[in-house]
Image (cartoon, rainbow, N blue to C red; front, top):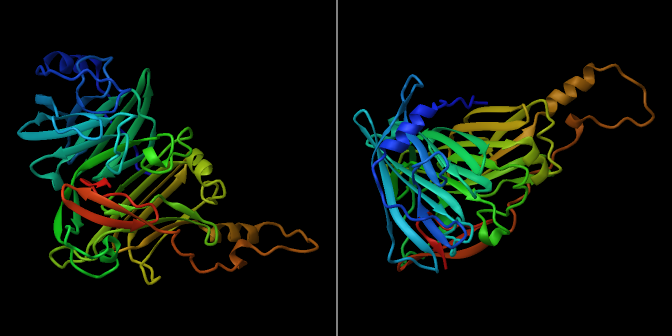
Length: 407
């Protein structure tokens, strides 16, 4: 697993940031009302829903702290669904590199959900996103994490519980991303495009981080908010849609179903990037019958739609109470990532152990036939709108694309 080693900032540095930050008329954040607030710089060591620091990690791994140049927060007069919402961002400078970071804290009672419900949402803009690795530290008072999504390459994170809330350190680079464009006159089913070997409509770069809050049910949470008391999952990827992973007891595998255009707009094959982190405690709660957390070794398989294996670069770690894996270089449109226990390790250990006669020997794990993969869980459809544009999204747990909201 990647080592999560982050710079520890001295109190003197934090104090200097609090004192010298440009003034801004920030909204008084009432986290109990339906609202979306701008995440600004921390003005004191006791403030929450704010950035402690923003900076750059250079090619040698050295952290270069940024200087806050400006920030703004203003009431959005077009607020909808009964929410009080603000627009704004902050600009930080590292040498000659400006970093514009837009952060928003959507409270527990935020209405409308916009396909993600209560969350912290951060977007980064830099001149050269594919080659600029940024790191930011923010504090939250109310967030109960259930799932973290990092749309960033070379990504990593650190989570700390602190008095009054939590501290999050997150880092990464911009992520190449391809997508389809839909409009009201497009009769093509949203999911149908992902099942066809066709070119994407757009190629671009994503540089975003989402920290989703565990609500009371799936109606006010990104996914079903089970086991949030035991931990949370973290994903980093360039997929357009990623369903909540599910445990397949037939194949003894944790399965991730992911979707993205088969080709980039240029016609080049669109390659995937996917990371996953979760604690054993969280895994055993959410998938109580899983065979992964106690396995001495795990394997990763990436299966194409036709069942053939996709070539990919992979790494996996399952120790110290945590599961982590990364896969890259595989091809879209709709592959499945399967994580299994390596049964050959168990079988080898059983064969080398002293043999004790028994009346009715049971077959070893390697002798048990594995049935073909079962299909995806039952799909459902939702309608998503953005202004006058609407689209239909179908899937096992359909979510509206970024910028759209559920009708």
